[in-house]
Image 1 (cartoon, rainbow over the protein chains, first blue to last red):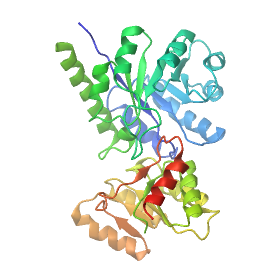
Image 2: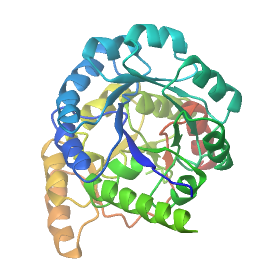
Image 3: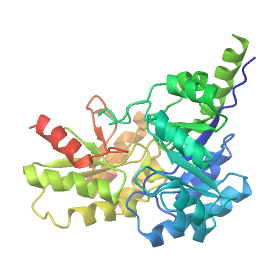
Image 4: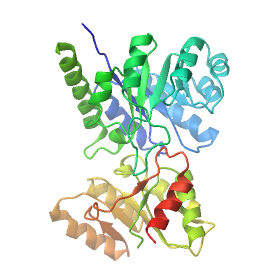
Length: 217
Length: 139
């Protein structure tokens, strides 16, 4: 019998007001199970990223949710983040690992590439991220990953995989059934018509539903 | 008003959109992400747009701050000087908010224009190219 234990992986909005967002994040994290939060500020300077990490870390620690810094192993280490997520253009795995240490989490973007994922896993990545699975806007993403990639990965290795790209409550089922260990979401949480905690709860409900359906099938 | 809005999430997004609009010589409408008022303060959004628009004094820029379903956030945004807000509100409060907005020369969108597609710059590899194609299609 196959078991599915998919979990939610939140990514922060690309820009936020540090005096407003923490309360919203706290409510979101209290809305249901969240495996990790990635701090991803687009185009922000070091000071802004450091301040953001400082205000978010206590909230995450209180709830046992690891906080991962995007792209910047140096800032992750300096601010006491639990790990770092690196893209293919953001330095290599070994450099990141050396900077954050062996106890920290290092995740690697692999787009739709099996080769990149195998390489990252062999080097010691704690997870690999595949995507984009769905369009995030009216334009198609440059790289489009297919759900079968998640199934192949799950059957090939024990290293967890994160699915990313345009994921919503409505379309996440196929990724859960395909074997995603984590669903990385941005807009579906922060732009939810009601509120982020409702979105987190809805994702968890869908994960539970899909898991039950798949396991009993 | 250009009816091909662009959703911006950061200063980088706004700068990319305005650089292209200025280059093409077309007016542009920038929108925050849906419900962004919940995490992006009104002053942060206002300052972000102002900063991005600095090099383009002659460019017609409409910046719409999306307040989701919260009339309080919309009123707060208007108090902070934003000239266009978007809100999904019940019909009974629409008139009041529109009146308050009008007193400061501001505009309120109530989501009635949702049939109009918007270009979302979230996670685009080349936002400038996407904006260029988007705005050219609307010319």
